[in-house]
Length: 196
Image (cartoon, rainbow, N blue to C red; front, side):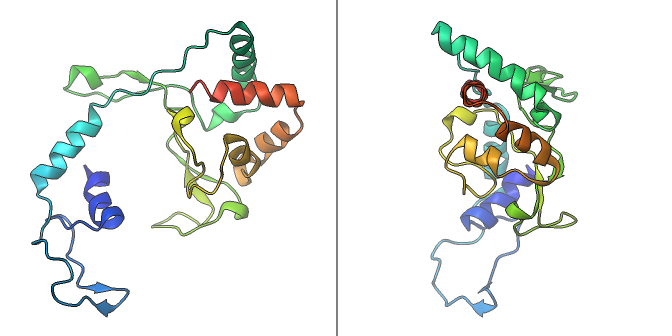
């Protein structure tokens, strides 16, 4: 609910009763009649409905490979993922907490994240909020990774391989180990990531 309530005004520019109406843009007054929609544009009930919709979305299932070669490669990639310590931050499975909703109560979810902040090095530093530092990022969930076209927090990496190669800070050792792999093992790790 908190995320959605903040995303509507901050990411989409829609006003809600939970967010202050912006009368300025970068300190410049907004001309009258710039936005003809009455404020607030969304009600608390609208946000609650979106939140319920998102809460009950099923996670994307892991891709099932049918080709023997690809299965073998992905199996090797899964082993490398653990061996390179990628799973230290991108934890394969976590459990939901207690919930009165049976479908959400203590269920395993293949997030591939610990949901914590980690220092990814100066090379990825960006704006930060609250107590985070510019190089601190919440571990990206890899769930549904195969459907993405852009990677990293800002979409600046065009491939999963490029995203791995740009990790630094706490992930530097894993990145360096990846760089030291044979091309065959790199292909295996990337094939595994294609199944998530």
